[in-house]
Length: 314
Length: 272
Image 1: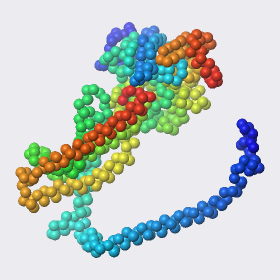
Image 2: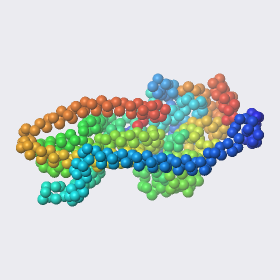
Image 3: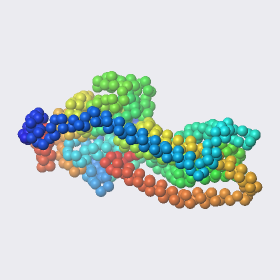
Image 4: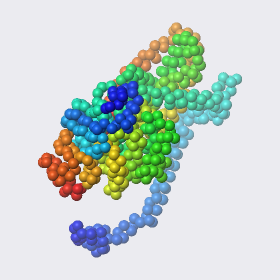
């Protein structure tokens, strides 16, 4: 047995090891390089087999399902797919390809505006200057409302509401502009929260260091906190923009609803009940605002905990 | 304070233009009955302290005795609950005082360096002078380079903080504070987060500052260093200054039982 506390423990010979019940040298030989390689091959074979079986089952579902032929004809018709892509105005077919370009245009414009507007909202929510209290409250209200109301309702609200106001310069814009406005208003609320999470992730000691140099609260935010916060939130922001790119397609419903109303010969300004959108929006808010407040409570508690040992300044 | 506009220095509208010539007043810092608590926890429970210009004070005491909080209160990073803090004769805890103007004249260095990780060493140092004092960029960089040269960090000016050792980071943090040309330096356990072999380089910088006549308030666990450098040592215990005096007296013939117990623990740990 090794002598307790002596350095000999580090230089134990084989006999000592054996006598202490440790595995003898070579005891693990069976799991050496060769067997490891074999295990790797086996795993590859198993995963290949299971992939083949899975894909086979999916293909079988499409080939042998009762409605398989109809689905192939309607969803995967090569000729129709090509026509849809290039469009054929004489048959009243809009080009999906052109639609995509429009989509990308809207997405890019909206993204730039969102990045800016959301940052304004996030910063307003962060400033603790008592003079700015009303702005802080407005920013809270803004994020609550636009996170709470579904994007489709915001699109309808602006797309149909703005023209109904008969305001010069506002009511005569295209669906393109209304769509971007709705996307910016809605997404900025989410992105502002992402920014805010990034701002909160910058350690209080950084703020303390900045303030101790005599930098004002705004300058600390501008030069020390925000540059670090923005770096942190780039991955989650990209995630939101993937989502934005898809949701841009929802703007097309503006045109569709107008067409449907016209086809049904409904005078949209007098008969169609847009109030139903308002009711839907209010109901959603009743559900989402308590959730938002609860989230804020959790964040505040977390910040409070982190500040308990640190500084009271923001 | 004998300046021509004695009350405008830290006012909200003033430019905080406290000049070296005006810093010749004898008393740099004065704390009167300072209380500070976090919730129900009273951290400072009546601190009275006077620091003369060019004086080096070391604060010693167990963890949690209030050393760091005291420094943070002087820098207004923590608002005091009671009592007042005077800097060069002016009450900086009075309402309406521009805390940014006050902080311009006080450098603080933290235990955990707190360099800005997204800026180079040079930018870390010039941020305050350019954005707070309004110094031109070239001038600020020239000043920063001179300070880096003085403390042997010239070759690091374009590095980011994460490329530096702890000792180098802490020296940069000291340079960053000095670049504001403060009248007072507060050092908050600046060597506690360092590997033992890096402590000496940082202590060397502080020694140089003391030699140059910098007024300093130093919270430290380095008792040997405190004995060497301090003009006066204050022993903090449970939020009050229990004992203070020249290092020789406090370290060799402490009067208070709690001071004796504290120092015995330090000696037993081989730290003195």
